[in-house]
Length: 254
Image 1 (tube, rainbow, N blue to C red):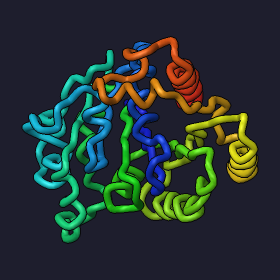
Image 2 (image 1 turned 90 degrees about the horizontal axis):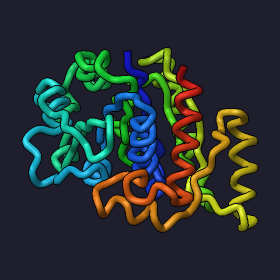
Image 3 (image 1 turned 90 degrees about the vertical axis):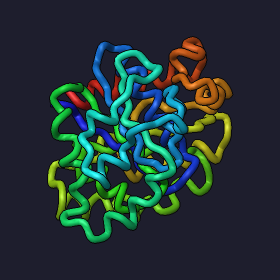
Image 4 (image 1 turned 30 degrees about the horizontal axis):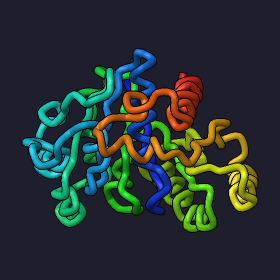
């Protein structure tokens, strides 16, 4: 049975999609089968794993809005052992279309049930908001990873995210837990980054991963080639960091 893992933070630009894509690729490298579900209408995880958003016949939108079987939407990605259920801008309309749906918070959870036995991990990349899409992801998940940028506004809105997680746990998914917090775009040379690290550790304690993801140009370049950092520059600092993070995630989910 797959471990379902959501990457979420309502603040944009924190490395959420970068973490989803590269974590999936390195878990796949370790001979685990992975399904990435792109639940962000921007579709950056879709294009970052080599899928042309303009050529899609079925997407996660069709799965959660039109009740299409998720198997019809799953594609092979550019990363070894990693499949993807892609998305495009159509997903932006799902918020409105799910308003009158019974048990709308459970739609994704029910949709992935037929494939949970086919993967070791299902990784869900969420939009930068606490929307019905994010609530669906949390309801369907075993754990959540919160990426936090090592900069000034990193902790802004974090209390709201944790409150939302607690509400979902209480009312919709009692098994949900915070698997970990990962510091991204990390530069230990700056005093500000070290202060943010200290605040995050004070808030989350041992939930903070030992691995921090550094600022790395190669990480930023890889998505334009439709591949994870593993297949773009495996010797880069970013690549080594995500490999270490994947090792930590697998250890925590055993």
